[in-house]
Length: 78
Image (cartoon, rainbow, N blue to C red; front, top):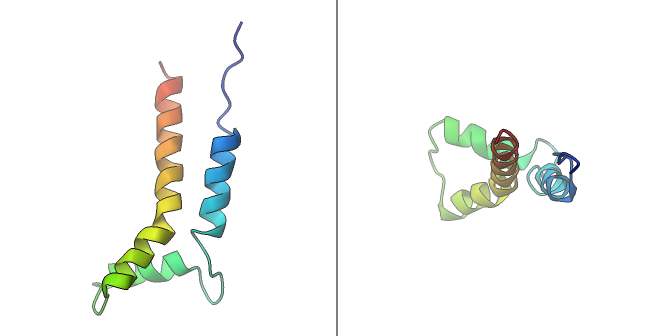
């Protein structure tokens, strides 16, 4: 019988590592992604193209991690 797949596989580990390192760097004085999100929630006044690209690059690992987790659980239910 086939062993059930575990969410904590190498793909998930790589996405989690990328999210915690690239997605949050630099860490001091606050994670960069959180600062960009606060700026966005505050109306994004003064955000230039590089700021939007920075938000995308720091948010992409988190988007990939969430998407993979949702895909894994939707596949497991079948």
